[in-house]
Length: 463
Image 1 (cartoon, rainbow, N blue to C red):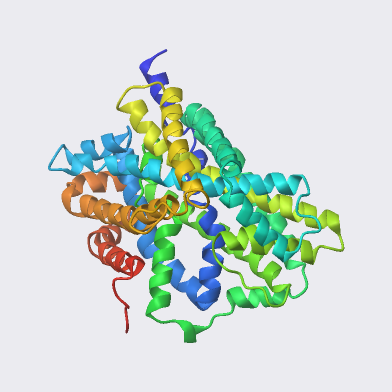
Image 2 (cartoon, rainbow, N blue to C red):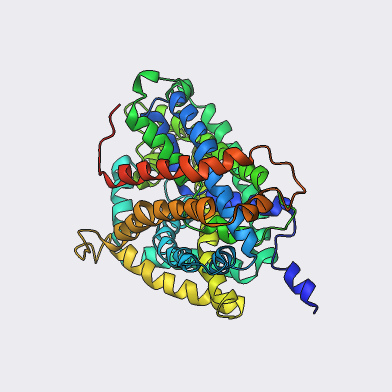
């Protein structure tokens, strides 16, 4: 096998594959339960407008920053930072942050992903039929606090993720994205159609899309800013890792806008599923987090379609398959962050690297799962393992990682290197380049500081 052929397998074979893989990394469970609720609580369409502005001014530039670092390195994240920094200062060690975060984020994310797989199986077996709201609360509490069942489903999610990553960039990650992302959109479109046909669906649309500018204040602005940042999973290094496999002719800015567009579309369509469904039953509220998708929505499906059991069955099954697809596309990128380091830097065969990382994550995920049951009284800084890992990733690693990437590319890297990446060595016109560089040097760091302070509750920002 020639060197060129070997290298060709370490890049995405097509531009579409690259976009779908990056979009799959960004699209996750948060698109389903966080965005719709944030929108409903913070002014509907008014929040969406502010969110879109910050997506363009904050989310996309930071994403493109990750793209530029990753593609320039053409290796793994650690190699990318070392190459782009020229070994200067401590920046060459910056690439270790995504390797560590890959272990942490997959360990607790896989637990929730395992829950979705279990609920998809329950839906397949028609396990929701005839249950009441009290039953759903009791079932979820019993399941999530059990010592064995959640671990089994978490292990299954990790095993599927490991198998895809072990197959490689083209045969595993790219092929998986090309299958799962279209399936995800098919499921979403079917569910939107069903949801919009429900009684009182207009109330859901009003709740989601009617702008209420009276609610717009500093809290709403900070929430929209944070949603734009966290929705794309920037700062972790997932996108930087995938960009290592981008071809040299990829337009980073154009692909960044495409990924952001797909991510936002999934979030909006999820709102079109959830709000009409929830509003079809008086008195229910679309709470964020696990209670929404594991307690509220199963109850909604049974009550709304109770007179037509086959519809209740299909709606439930398709919804949880949608969640499984969203969870898997994200978990693949999380595993790849750490596995790529073992494969490229330590020169382990890719399958072995994927298995090692998966095994460690499975052990850590067991700690996270048991924090809902047998280990609920074991805490560190007042938090169980699940909450601790979530805190470390969402409150610390993501903001700090995003900040350091902006500082690195905006102030440390030679401007000629950055311009060459953004223009593909002068072969592309890049009229937005000056604006982009200004944003990552000044605007993005200030926004990230505000997000960081807001997430930690360090201040109440008042106009």
